[in-house]
Length: 269
Image (tube, rainbow, N blue to C red; front, side, top):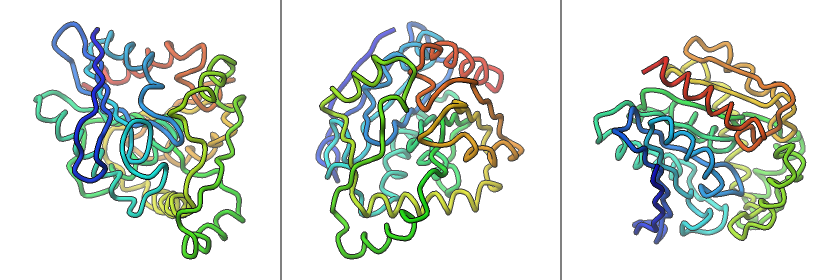
C-alpha cells in the first residue's frame, strides 16, 4: 500500500489538498471518501490504509474551506459547490473503468447523500457513516436562517465534546491538538446545512444507488434514530453497532467496521 498527499491547484479556492491510498495490485474498485464537519481527510489514515490493503484505490480530499484546501474556514455561499467538488473526484474515479464507491462520514455522509439525490452522474455504490440527517435543536432551526441573513459570516462553535467521538481517549486528544481541525463554522453554513437536512429527509425514497449505512448506537452528535428512515429504503442496507460512538471508524473496533464495509462492497461488485 502506498500513500500520496498533494496540494492541487483549484480554480475557485486556490488549492485543494488531495490524499490517495493505493493498493499493491490492480484496484478492485475506486472509493471517493468525504470527511465530516470540522475535520479533514488526514484523519482517515487508518481507514484509507485498511481499504487499500483490501484491494481498493481510495481518494479523499479536504472540502472547500477545510484542512489544507483554500476557502474561508467552514463557510460556503452555495451548498452545491460541495457537490461540484465531489463530482470532480467521482469523474476522476470513473475514468479508470472500475466500479466506483462514494463514501462519507457525518457531514460527509449528508454531502454524499445530497449528491446521490441529485441529477449528477452516479457512482455504483455508496457507503454512509452516521450521515448528518438531524440532531439540531428547534431553536437552531428557527434562528439560523435569520442570523444568516444579517450576519452570514459570523462564526459559531460546533457542539463537539471529545467523548462524543470515540471511546478511545487518544482520538479526542489528537482531534483537539490537530491544527487543521476547526471547531466552528459560519452562520450561513449552518443555515444551509439545516435546509439541506430537511431536503434530504423529504427525498430519501428517491435513492436508487445500492447503499450501506452504518451508525454507532451511542452516537450523541448525530443520534442513531436519524438514519432509521434510510433503513426503510429498498436499496439500503443499514447496520447499527452496539456501544460505538459517532466516529465508528475511529473506535477500537474500527478495523472490524472497515472489514464489514469491504465485505459489503465485495458482495455488490
